[in-house]
Image 1 (cartoon, rainbow, N blue to C red):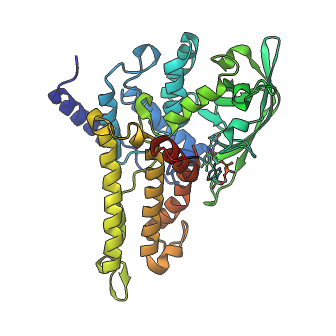
Image 2 (cartoon, rainbow, N blue to C red):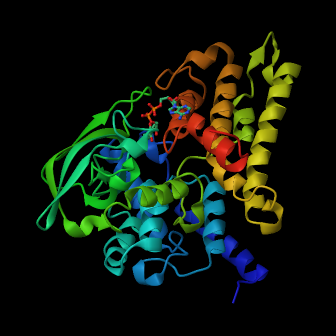
Image 3 (spheres, rainbow, N blue to C red):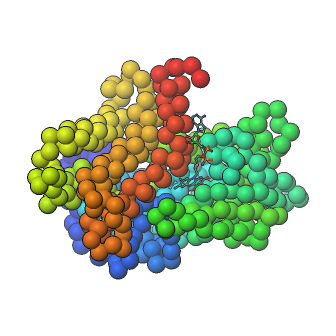
Length: 400
Ligand SMILES: Cc1cc2nc3c(=O)[nH]c(=O)nc-3n(C[C@H](O)[C@H](O)[C@H](O)COP(=O)(O)OP(=O)(O)OC[C@H]3O[C@@H](n4cnc5c(N)ncnc54)[C@H](O)[C@@H]3O)c2cc1C
């Protein structure tokens, strides 16, 4: 029986009270602003402990089956818990590749053995997951991935290189796309999908430094790395289909996601608060009519994004272009986020050029760091240009 309004209201109060008491104090080091920026052990352990606490309290994986560590509740409860996490500005849940993509995939199409083996460890943050799709010459062109998986007796032998592997150096498992049949007529049919262990001989990761000076992803090398046959998900040759299903989760079809915040929340209001006291030509910058125009534009974009997501949940409002909001939300959300952060720095005037570590930087350089980091989401999981192609072809019906 569906939960009543009263039950949902009481649940919201309960979560809110819990967040108030349990939100951890800021540590004496910078926390990542998204799951793509976990760069060192201190950050990792802090976030691991937070995710464990959230799960132990029952506010993560609420809609996943109880048998695998979930709460067995209606998804609406997880939505409410997520809203309260956002409202209370709590830390992110860093194990996003597990919680948002690998986990839902295993839950939806995995074997019973896979569900029993992997799901609980994803929720309680014991097992960190990474994603091995992109290769140095095959990012957007994922269908041409060349990392090889060759079957030898009761094992697959992996050779090749992946790149931009978020949390590759911390992960215990990888969702891996590799080529099992280089002779396949269609390149897509030669690919297979693996739930692959990282801690085996022949797998090496090398962290990559970002424009922020911080870390978060790796190059990942496979040199005769041997993994068991049962790491294969589905059948050989089904890798492309399974990878596409994973990308659907990654690009915003979050119905199966376990919940938790994947990145910090930054709103137009936060920007306005941060600009108090900033002047342009002797007047408060926020009173400049041109600036006000830009701020109104940002407010409209933020509202449109939020209302779009609400609209997505109301079937009859989506009959004109079915699936359009889900398919376009990654593109819109990542670009709106980047634009807002860019605007915030621009409005700081000369201070906009200061960075984290400079004592004169506004809010410790928060917005500058956030701006650099905001490019991550416009590239990872498919670049904005590729997303725009998808919208053009699949929603608007434009020619290739
Ligand atoms: C922070 C971050 C984290 C990431 N994490 C992971 C991860 O965990 N696992 C993983 O596998 N990958 C990860 N990636 C990689 C990401 O998926 C790729 O960077 C992305 O798919 C683009 O591929 P590429 O870098 O090879 O760029 P390219 O594909 O070489 O693209 C270069 C440029 O050409 C444009 N372009 C390419 N093809 C087209 C086209 N058909 N039409 C129009 N324009 C086009 C692109 O938009 C881009 O501007 C991550 C990336 C980032 C930035």
